[in-house]
Image (cartoon, rainbow, N blue to C red; front, side, top):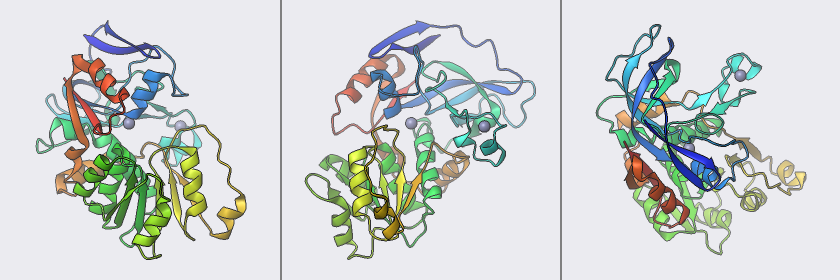
Length: 340
Ligand SMILES: [Zn+2]
Ligand SMILES: [Zn+2]
């Protein structure tokens, strides 16, 4: 079967690899149906992701169909439609022991620190696999993982229906988070971006306010919109240290500030800025058992704009074209799906 391998930074190759013989006792064998390309995959392609060794088969967002079930696996059948949680943890360290396996001491993400799923068949441990009903199409199911990242942020940031949430950056995660904040928690959401096209998408997904980030202090603009009663929560969904620094310095008293970026550029923040306004700086990594919640939200119609994140679709074997498109940084590109 064919696998897309990033041999070294900026070099994509197709490799003919052995099809898995069958699932291990605690695994299921999945035939890929749809996979999303994440900005993490683009970083892996460019060699700008610190945690990756090469060669690497990327991909951690996908849906598929079970074609074989391991001997000890219960509750799954051939033909089940499934999504996969890409978080791989040890199960033994102190964080795993208290259920926070997404920050396991040796945590890995499928397709980042270990080979992922840009291939036709893959064996996955059954306890990482979640079934979904046919009402959810394959492409939308491939979005469960980015929505699980948004769900984790909402949990970590203690979002509630009284919150006024400013999301900085209308990429896949920013827009998914907007939908979760509004559709699941009933909070208000404003979003900023430099792209007017992305802001139009945000409007279609129900944003209460959209802010053109070009040449404006986004926190100030959000405070004007909420007449100084918000934002109560600010999320940097761009992952830029200079920007995060600005957000922290401008945040109103008592703000909770979400950090999800993997950038290694240091921040320069005088501690007094955090102390005097009792700011809470809250990190959020991947997800902690959020896939069942997201699948339920999809089924209950709480995230009706989910599929609107998908702006482009390619056949799996056209993946190079998809990477070219993402590398072009064109503003009309949000989530790109590969169809198997
Ligand atoms: Zn991702
Ligand atoms: Zn662990």
